[in-house]
Length: 407
Image 1 (spheres, rainbow, N blue to C red):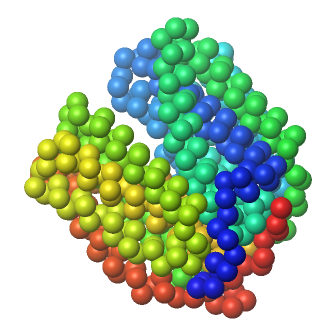
Image 2: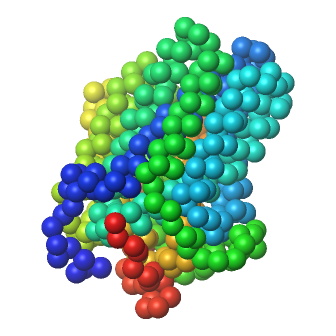
């Protein structure tokens, strides 16, 4: 790993000069904005019908909850499908679902069932898209491309919430769902017209047994297991601390959320754009420590201005994930790369949800500030325990994948 940065650090101009990356970027942006609008519109529609805050929240989160099921049963398909064909089909299915949600007049139970069933396949869509990113960019451009997509996800979620909010207040949830349908169609068209056709990475049918075998390979090897844990647990615990901003600061929580988003943005830009590959790897542990250490100050219950400064500094540490993702792509076998990236992404989402649940329960017993400090201590402990496992090098011929195609 130490010798990988012999060339210059890639630039934004270089990665955006790759036509297929532009296609992935545009398709991903339209997809994220559309799914955000759909979730908010469906939640509003269910609340208007039932008046139930629980069912409204279930409608909003229902598409995310089943992703763990998809990761456990379907991810082997990510390496057995033709990427362009699958991504076009996936976007088309999302468009149909959004149209049905808007126009079919289904009862609430059917709306929730449909959105949760569709959520099972979300992990598969993300796995295929992540694997294509490795193919379309030069190997040393992957981290910068990944950081750009990370930034676009946050921006498109904000845009999706803003557009959906305006539409909901002016025309209502059904036209908002139709707008999300239109964005899914845009995703399908952009993907079909600009992404090159590629064969599947491996042959055979994707089954539950194949998914379980692939997950056992990834979790059975020390390096990939520790990389997955390093991506899931320290991050998830700090996201759990972020879930307590509102109980901690009340109406001032918005300043803390903005500070955290700014810190994450700065970290992705600096580490993704200006830091060479081997340096990113060396910075994994220091950045993981930075992510958690400032949160210890919440045991002293700082004022809002100090709390915002703390989370701004700490959130720079999220950029440690870029080095972890870079190592992970190098360590996994190419034949299950799609499944591996899907497992990594779904595991992060699940870990964050579990951590938020646990910190919320603990904060009902302790103060929010004390709970945030405990989450930080746990995150630091996990980071330290994983240091020996992250020093392992890929086993020649087994963990190391074949060289990816270059654009």
